[in-house]
Image (cartoon, rainbow, N blue to C red; front, side, top):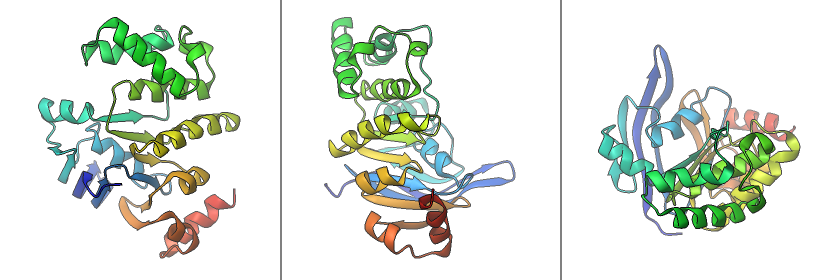
Length: 247
C-alpha cells in the first residue's frame, strides 16, 4: 500500500436545519486503503460518505479526492464522480432495463464507449461478481443479493479508483448477505481503495485496514482492526462493540 492520500477531509461539518450531522470531521484515506466506518444510527456515517462524492454538500471544511477539491461546481463534481463509485443500501437499478443494459448505460453515455466494448466490459464485471448467467434478466427476476452484486458491477464498469459502500447489506435477507460480502472482500483484496459503512464486523475483521467509530457526527475512535476489536479506547466504542458483537 502506498502512502499517498487519495482522500483528504479537513474539518468538515454538515447541518440539516438544527441537526448537526457532521461536526469538524477530518480523515485521510491512502491509496489502496480499506476503511470500515461503524457507529449507531444517526451518527453521521452515511452523511460522511455522501459528502465525499458530492451527494451532500458540506457546509464547512474541505474535501479533496484524487487531487481534485470538491467545490460543487459541475467540473469538480464530474471529475470526482468519474473517480468514485458508490453502492447504496437500495440497489437503484433501472427496472425496465436488463442487467447488462444497466451495466452498459454509464460506459456508453459517460465514457463514450462503443457498444461492443461496453458489452465486453459488462460481461467481465458480471463474471467478477459471479453472476454472468443473469445478463439478460431484469432486476425483478433476481434475488436481493444478486441485485446488489449487479449494483456493484455497475459501479465497477465506470472503472473507479475509489469505491464507497453505504450499508450495502442492510436491505438483504440474512442468507444473501455473505454472497455480497464475498464480492466486497475479493474487491478489497484486489487493492481497490474502499470506504464501507457497515455493521458486518466479520467482514471488517477480514478486509479493513482501518476501523472508524462515529457517534454524534464525530470520529470518536480510529484504529487498526486488531486494536479496535480487542482494546477499544473509548467507553462509547466499547459499549457499541459489546452490543453489536453479541448478536
